[in-house]
Image 1 (tube, rainbow, N blue to C red):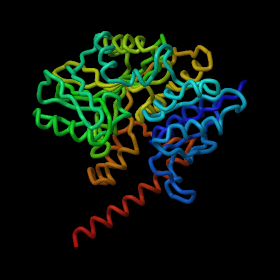
Image 2: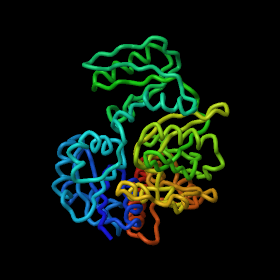
Image 3: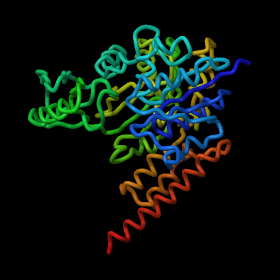
Length: 400
């Protein structure tokens, strides 16, 4: 059997670990390329992270953001010419956009997620996504585009208030740019702040109150679309993780046939080959499309917890095979917990230790514990104990 190497790129340790386990159990030799704005020194404790402890990870490399060219040079220097097939697997927008922007340079050496026509970066445009979603029959919020360039911006006509702003292409902005604005004055102030920081076209959307949030994780072969489950986000993070799923209940997608058909119709328009996730929200009984991510997000590991390895299907497809997707069906509800978001909610003071434990008790499966790969969870438990001691000391000092 031909050797397959998986090079997994990203920042979030849950995403990196989940993908390492998925690729490792699929028979790949796994390497990580971990990105950060500040690279850890050789002896830095930041190098001792849970994902680096996985039995599936042979070696971890580091690349500084936003030096895309250096990341590409690292990939070619370390992995071009390796025996067998090398598959690049990004797990966040920065890595996905880097691979796509440098695809001509990388394609002679590697396989990676791609679109059959056009580019992934073009599909990251939220305005383009919304047009595709509407064609697929999915409701979307009304939206307007504000061009922000060279320190100036143009306020579009017809905006209704309240509205909600977000970067038109996610990796060009940051979460600070995502804000509810109740008046033209607030919107103008937000756009002025964006213009002072960088060029970043902004999507201004009709504000719709979110009553419930959902997610869908799947695999697209360019034509066939596999969607095993709908995730009900029954618990989301706070602060820096506001809106990120901490506790999700997965239900079989066949229980939602109309939504399944709409999402399949959306993905078939893209020609995308890879794993994806979609954010949805509900208001007044209507399910709205929010965003398509052309990579697997951190909560995508819930599919592995349910016994469905979507990345393995992607790897086989990229290698020219035809994976058996008949088993990619969820047969029962399952509740999964993101240990990372849960711990950081506790560390940041949003929940108590009792609430932290209650979340754990309510989950059927968690992302860190794995009997076949125990070391990442052992290290995570050590960190959790250290954080609890620090918070306890801080609370005691605060009472003095």
